[in-house]
Image 1 (tube, rainbow, N blue to C red):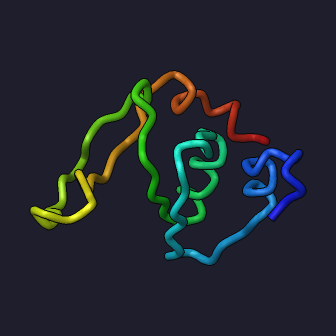
Image 2: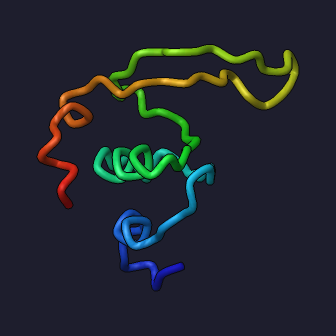
Length: 90
């Protein structure tokens, strides 16, 4: 999507998706402002959490026993970055 010198998260902020879209991304896209904007727009996202990502598990969903998925959870971010509304004005 970029020339390699541009941070992909910067490009992700420029993208818009219709409500109901689910975006799959790697943990390099950690950006609480982006997550908040997508949540308000009813856009879901799937990612692997970083080890220091503070969160609360709201729902655990079943996953196949021998599949590649370790867990399927609906979470709420609880860290300081996730709780600061002023960050969402970007």
